[in-house]
Image 1 (cartoon, rainbow, N blue to C red):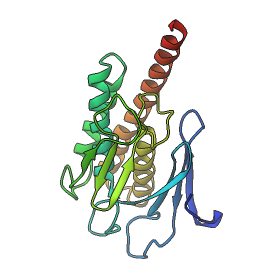
Image 2 (image 1 turned 90 degrees about the vertical axis):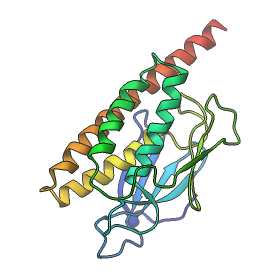
Image 3 (image 1 turned 60 degrees about the horizontal axis):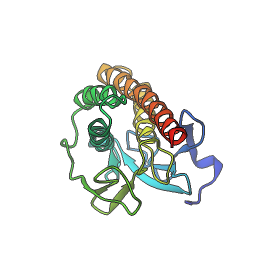
Amino acid sequence: MIDFSDDEIFAERRTADGKRFVFFLGTDVLPYWEQRFWTVVLDTGADGVGIPVRYGTVASASVGWSLRQLLCVAKARMALEQARAPEGGAQAVLDALGRAIRLLPQGDLPGGGVSFAPGVLPSPYSWTEARYGDLDLGLCPDPESRDEGIAPEQLLIVVDEALREWSERAPYLSRLWTCRNAVREALAAEIRRVRIARDAAEDAGGAG
């Protein structure tokens, strides 16, 4: 678990089921950056992992996962889930994520050097780890977002919080507001998808 004090927390949010936290830390943020947090601590279900996050523009942090990259990782995961369970609700997440990515202000290029690899835990997905340089995101290997790892919902919470903070400081950038609306739609759709997946898993367990 990464060490930090309460006064370093810029914001705190939780997943819809209340079981996983997301802490946004203002630690080491430089005065000329256009962001008020950099490190985000994500509850993996077994521990807390810290990842650096940047907005992906010239005046943001120079190191970390950009907002575009995080959305692209979530979108790639939802494409796998849509192929696994076409009626499970992933398509609504995909549609909203596609709009959000198109609406993001110009910055780093789509894809952004992200690669994918299988994780150590069994999974119905061909990959559960996203990598960018020396950075790594280990996602939950299960569709229900219950096993150890970062839930896709948490990635969307990170982007939503960044866009909330950014748009409040720059209300004249209407593109930020419309992008955040798309991210919030994706977040709501992902919450619905997880509930469907958990109900399906419980029904399958009861049938067994």
